[in-house]
Amino acid sequence: MKPIKVLFDRTGNTLNVWFDDPQKEHVSEETSDEVILVKDKDGKLIGFEVLNYLSADEAKDVTILHVESGVVN
Image (cartoon, rainbow, N blue to C red; front, side, top):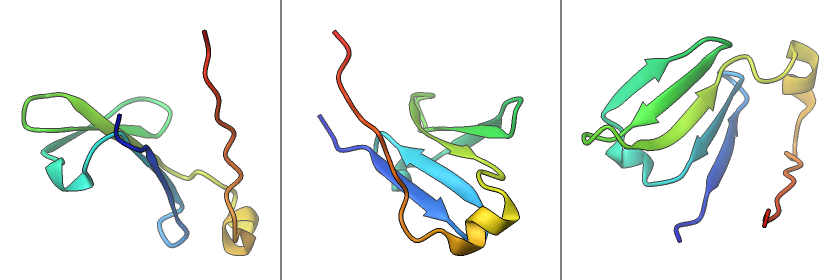
């Protein structure tokens, strides 16, 4: 299993989550609620981007993203 990459872009105020290599990005599909799905050339979902992830005040002060993870049976 490949590691999941979670990146916050302070300048763009976006949260990017990648399930595969970002270099494989071929097409992006905007959905409702400011979410963009990122797919490879075969149409496989390889990541997503959340626009306007934090408020302006939160975005300028953030230094660490707290991520909760777990496994559901």
